[in-house]
Image (cartoon, rainbow, N blue to C red; front, top):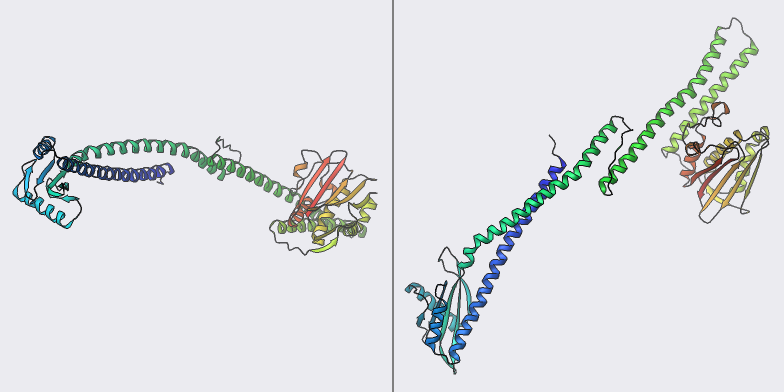
Length: 464
């Protein structure tokens, strides 16, 4: 069974919290321990300085010793006064001969060598609790009077250590518990929409593109849901487009095949040869075969354009002259439909770097589309508008126009408007899709404006 994302997140967050809290507990313990020892050392030095000052200022030695004895009664501290011969005179507590010798040796070595007046010593007493040893020499009227020595036990902190650790552990455990509960809650909040997204994507994978994914949030999960919704919409459009493509291609191929099969069967089963009838039948077969050839050619070209397998051979041309030469090749079509075509521009000369063959095919496809749906006596205007950034070729007709519902779809392959894009009016249904691809591989864009009964404006825009 696969691990859930929420469990993984919770595990890693709790593990990180555990490491961080443990580190903080250890750090806090060592920090408080060192702080206590430093403060204790400062207190010891201040205490020694006070004792020495009292004697140096003339207070009787016995009174000072009495104050020391009273102050240290019941405390874990040993105070010893060594006389001018460094022999112990007064002791605040009973101490064994062995440790008294240790104190005496340490004081003598430190005083004679001028060493540090304070040292942390691991005495080996009471479970190796470290002690603070410190001394302070007494000099009165320029004469050496003796030394105060203190052995301060740090065991008070060691005794409180367990309580401190328990307190820190309780605080850490409480923090860990709150963090774990919060993490589990947050991971569930995060994983719940992800689970829903997962269920939805599985349904999408099964082909259900009508499923709705409603996750209202402005974070990354909400953005993911929005992207999946957009992807589903595109998949649905692709599925519908594929179905339409198969339907259209089947229809457009089946019809000429039916004609070819039917007329060839009539010719095959005819009892005798009628040259006139055979020529008429052969003409129908030829035209339908030619229609199939055009359809396959357009499909092949559109596929190559969409896959980016077309190589452009660009060259600089005078766009106005180039358009006039293209229109001249379709002059017979204009004459047959009694349509006037005019070319003009906002400049006397507009030069552009284009693939004359490819872009010429795009212009011809738009022109033929305009001729097909412009009534006799109509006008087609080809207007070239050049700016600093782009050149726009506008092809305007006063034909039957396109409805607002159909207008956004005219660039799709095989899309046919019921009246103005029927099969009987000619064309493979791929012409404008090819136009769009050709203009886009030139780095440009296409646009269209139309009003039913008024006419249609096509815009082919290419960068300068």
